Amino acid sequence: MSHVKNILVTGAAGYIGGSILADFLSRPDLLAPAKLHAVVRSEEQLQALSKLNVSVLNFELDDSAAVAAAVDQNQIDLIIHAANSSDTLIVTNLVEALGRRRSTTGKPVFFIHSSVTTLFSEEAGWPHGMLKDTESIYEKEKELGSSHPVLQTNLLVVEKAQECGVKCFNVVVPNVYGRGKGEWRKVSILIPALIQASIRLEKVHKFDVDGHPPAAHISDLVALYRILVHKILENEDIPSGKDGYYFAMAHRAPWWAYMRAIAQSLHARGLVADPEVELWPSDEAAAKALKFPVQFIRAMGTASGGLEPVNARQLGWQPIWDERRFLESTDEEVQAVLDLDTIRTGIFDKLMQPATD
Ligand SMILES: NC(=O)c1ccc[n+]([C@@H]2O[C@H](COP(=O)([O-])OP(=O)(O)OC[C@H]3O[C@@H](n4cnc5c(N)ncnc54)[C@H](OP(=O)(O)O)[C@@H]3O)[C@@H](O)[C@H]2O)c1
Image 1 (cartoon, rainbow, N blue to C red):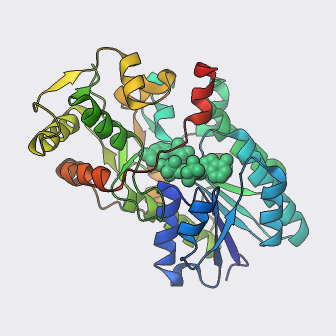
Image 2: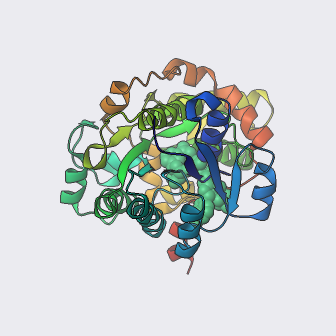
């Protein structure tokens, strides 16, 4: 049995982190006897999560002293980082804190990072085409020498973990959809933004290129984190470090077909004037309407990328949702946005700052 007695989930008030937490809490046998700790960063979030059977910690992850204290005082040996994919300071704080814990106890410590599949697309500057997650991703990222913040963070995860003696894993997250099960933010990022922008503009738009990016339903994504944690707690030797990339791709999301389905759903609800989909007048207009950084909008809206999830499948990950179910669930997604999209995501705040300074 594993020595891990305490697991920390960052981004626990967020869509993915909150859903991971809810899933783990619904399966106490999975973690026993390990205990869950959740990081939030406001009093309201703390209140919202306080009814759960977890210890809720309220601090900023960029505060290295606060991270060190939380890991040390709560004897954390495994961190699931679902707060931010592109912040190197946060990764440094978390991995260094785990490294100190390892030095103190002499026992293995583990870090599960959450990254972004869009990075591995031509539109984001990735030159390698079709790619399996078993194909030296770290080395390819290193060779590319790009300043993309997600790539820089991926590299740091491997290098900092190696330096600190931490076993690391990188779940590379695609476009996620479906109702989240967390206590605070319950919807995803891109699809809700597309639906909200359509309602505001009373018109559904699509990009001039029909992207087919990787996608996964939130329940399937969470299942992959569950499998990883289970294997870690069972002391199974699974790919980690430079080899520890897990593409969490369940299927593809055909954007033009999806935008057509959104238009039909919104039209039937009287939320857009007609069911036709128009092209965005420009990438700048799309970025402004969706409230995303313009430098990433092309990759977010038009990329397909050629990913093959070998590592996750080898762990036994079998997603239940496929492209057909994804398309058929469009109306449910619209309803989820209308019901639940009340809390904005802050994940682009730092990236948007340079443009507005
Ligand atoms: N959703 C997707 O489709 C998708 C796809 C690919 C990759 N990802 C990546 O997965 C990660 C999580 O996504 P998500 O959809 O769950 O986003 P989310 O709902 O915005 O959740 C992120 C959570 O992390 C918290 N957080 C961020 N910075 C923090 C800090 N410095 N200290 C403490 N807490 C902090 C946020 O707090 P606040 O609520 O106070 O801002 C929020 O509760 C992101 O990095 C995202 O880029 C997501």
